[in-house]
Image (tube, rainbow, N blue to C red; front, side, top):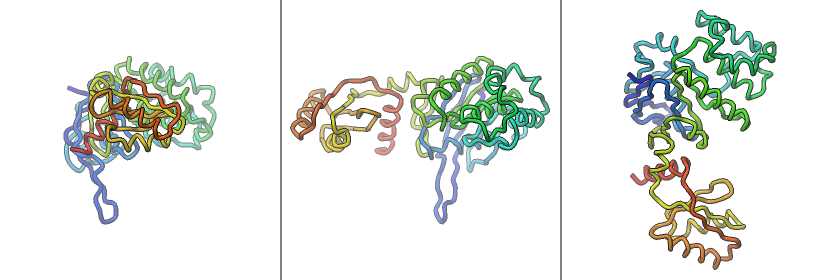
Length: 310
């Protein structure tokens, strides 16, 4: 039995006179003890799915179970067994760190002392602020307090909805280290994130766009599915370079990636050199094309384009 099973979940919302479909027949499973990532931009349906799996929202159709319990029939059992950290900080800002922890422990008929071993590695980082009100904490400290509160009753499945959004790079790295330590304690973890670079920190990922799963596999397997030669392109005027590249008939796809553009070409490698020559003729300076290895984001963009064409 898997820790989480999702079968053809569909969810719609009314938006004025129209109906918006947030989830299109989503199906997947998560093994016990797995760190599973839902990777996708805002509006992909990640939060809606998490709210259904944590029994805070009903699906329009389909079935789902968490820890072997049906999300509709057995919602009380699920609420005892899951930890949920929503994307927006939702603890009591006028209560101190210690008071928030004590309150959530009391809700689950437990205590900080009883489950201290589970939260110890996290708690020692916020203990010196235990008398500070939660609203006065930094983003990284709020994040760790929220994680402590989600773990205080020793859940078997942990849902984290975009936990690293809005925090600095150091706090993001520290948070993922905490998750890998928690995984050693056989806790199943589902984490959603819009950051493609975090996909490689998961055991498996589901790439989600507009309420649909574009692909599910290990990060390594997903990148191996990229079946085209990928190039990075640079020049002095990057905006004009992007415009001119997209205008070339030999270019299959072109997307901006930080300080470079990632490009695929139709046909042979000769087309890359042909386009490079043409760009120089158009007045571009310091044009450079280099072969590179694809990342998760490249695969996501390719799958998204394939879905649009299908």
